[in-house]
Length: 391
Image 1 (tube, rainbow, N blue to C red):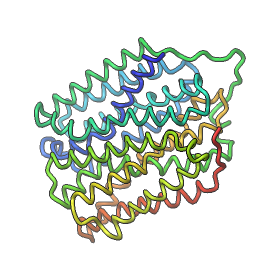
Image 2: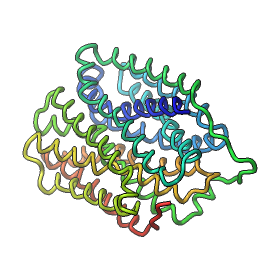
Image 3: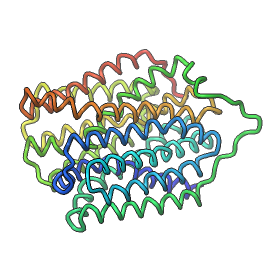
Image 4: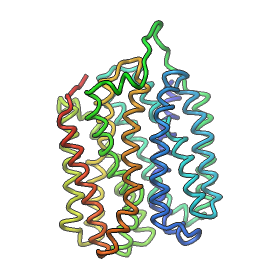
């Protein structure tokens, strides 16, 4: 089982890579196949939408057939197949389809890991395990930054993506061989998604999931690249450095949030504090934009650290889910997390286009980031009514 979990973590590292690699690929995709920022924002949004919508069937599959077959099958045909399609793309439409396939294929990987944790480890350590898993997997963010930029310059973007497609297929096969499904207790109760939706305690958690992951995912996955390029004339290596810094910050944030519930004696308090600070930082781009490249990178890094509350939010939500609905519970929460990121990416492209018609680039980016900050504050206001629970 340890080897199986290890390969699931590697697979989720690839998931993190695929959701963020468009930020570095953006300039070369525009130059070679005419994919605009709007095209890539839509493709990125559809990745998250596909990932989110797959959570419902994935939740059923985890509770019914187990994580081994669920994760290996989708990761092979969705993620590896989509990456191969991406590598052969001749236009923006194929890029979009490939991103949808990759999103579907990556959908079960983290939830399979969480399912195993929930079934085989105590509830008290779930948050720490979840944070460590996402923290280690966030190395995919780092791979999709400066290292990816270097690989593109050395081998070309197509050859690089083909290599990742082959590696993804190998990881899918390793999961099929090494992952073991946790045993189900005899006579375990049955239930459905409706049982979870009837629980009022979960609704503020769903709202928090919807807003907590979107800012860091959206900025790191796409907007950091055009921001530093348009505002400060950053070249590919500088874009790679900016994304690397934010990626490292997100890794650190996941490790910091992991044990936060035990440090604070609360899951709710660190979520409120961290996301409140993210909202303030986003609003600062609007009210007082950074004057230089490195000050901007520092702000993105701070958002990366503080915006990595996803593991503790999903841990808070999981604490309300009965054991026989573990798979459906974590995937329902993840649906809202990835759905929020997808909605933000969808809306961010046309919103920025509309803002750019009447504003200079600095003001348009600042207004876009400020709007995201306001949405976080709305989510926090609703989440503040949630019941705290550390068990």
